[in-house]
Amino acid sequence: MQPEEAQLSAVVRFYTGRSSTPPPDRYTIDTLRENAEDWDFLEGEHAYIQWMFPLEVKSGMIARAPIVTPQDMATFADDEDLQNTVLEMLDIMLHFYGLRRTRSGIWVKNERLLRWSLRPFNHNLLRISRILRSLRLLGRGQESIALLEALDSVLGEVPGLQRTFTFWHKAVYGPNEFPAAVPKASATDLHSKPLAASPAAAGPRNMALQMGLQMAPLRQASPAVLQSLTNFAPAHIRLT
Image (tube, rainbow, N blue to C red; front, side, top):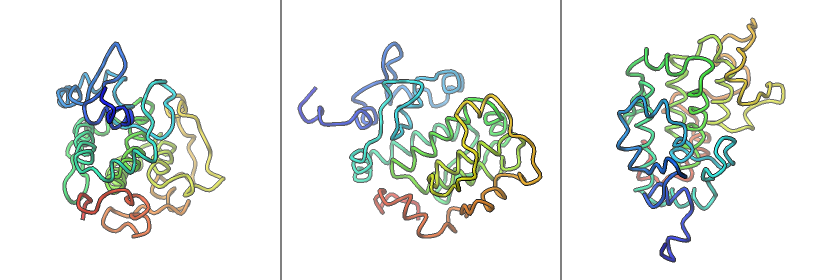
């Protein structure tokens, strides 16, 4: 490894093709590109998503997964190639879930696939939480909002997903948007038990309104929210 490469973080090294996931898999960024249309790979493999969409906290599943640092956030903000790679990885997963990204937002192209992939109590719900949060960290806050809106438009009233949506909202808007009364649950709650029926639980959009969350469409989100989510993204590569 060259001296200058030794200064690169694990996140940047993976995104620039300089490293891979740990053995035995050793997936690289090019591995993900090569398997972009392989549904069995994307669904069945579990050792790539932590590198594809890293977080700022340690993974509870894979100890060696990279962690996003403030320096990583600044590095991604200043590098158009890295930003484009984030969008490329996002497009792979959107296609996998039956969604598509355009200049104006994120839209549903295969509702049946989306509903099946994100049915209650399966691992893709946790993947979505990771993707939403990672997009914010890597400078793609507007796409994070757009993805949440697309999911809400189709899955907002699905029985069993109300609690999941509280996690998704938190991933996008941050913990300060949630009052202390909101129940806290471990990740396993998404898989192990449904949310009890309640007259007050009229769907995540109503829940969001009750909690004071801003569920505005991408182009109607308040400037303050958009600024807080995209202040690391260079203006020339943001959605406008």
